[in-house]
Image (cartoon, rainbow, N blue to C red; front, side, top):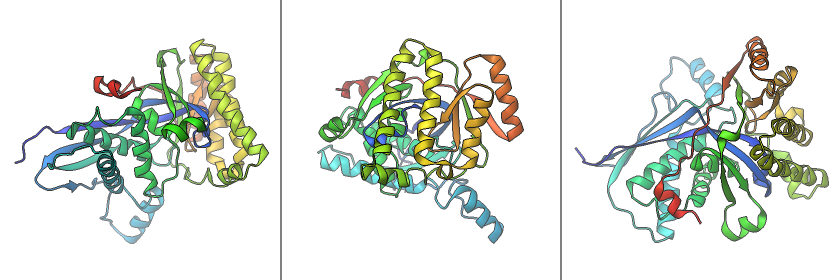
Length: 353
């Protein structure tokens, strides 16, 4: 029996509130970490280094060939083991490159998650973020790896596996709470990361999460728009600038608790996204979730790339009840958003510049 502390960390689902997807276009976003769903990773000291498959998410035993195919169609080919292996490599490489000494003790990593797949709630990055936090404590290097850098490490681990995404999800999960993010090109080129400003999440009005039980794949949404932006297409460049400006305006609107303007910004964010990406890329099911919210007068937009929607009912509980009825008819799930407070501790704050 190897002695040592068993370390467990959770990382929570993320909602992009305003400005997404401009984080991958040198823009600005406001995102929040929510406790409705989370991933957890446990690190247990052990004689050998072991990455444990999850009995459900890394399922390899099937009742039949049709069972296997149905499982792949709904869950995809990969579980979380590859994510844990990837962040292990990224963490090790970063420490070696930056002369951060690591002890030679071994461990067993295991994970679990209840974040629904393909809902744009950052399920993959949550697993990676929780694992990174375990490493920071196991190797006692939390004060040697800056908080601003950690989202980059998480994204690098996902990029290694072919996952295409931006930094905002990882920032929200590292910082917790409500965060305003500035990804201006000058800062990204100079520092390698954006400027991240925690906000007071209690200034937000009640928000709701809508998601589908069997969502469409959110991974295809960025494809053509990214290339058109790189090609300098004026419509895409100007529209993405407007999306980024929505987050800038949103910061002031939230601080002033101007909820009518907040509702307008939420709707405008989605409308701009729709005009750039087109209905075919966004998907009928995803658009339907937004339209159901708007049908009862609620403001709504994607939480990420699709599969889930954040909704704000400015008229209060009576409007929430109408939204609940409409979601039930359509087969969608409606939940109040529960925001996670800041995840940073005393040692984390020491690394902030």
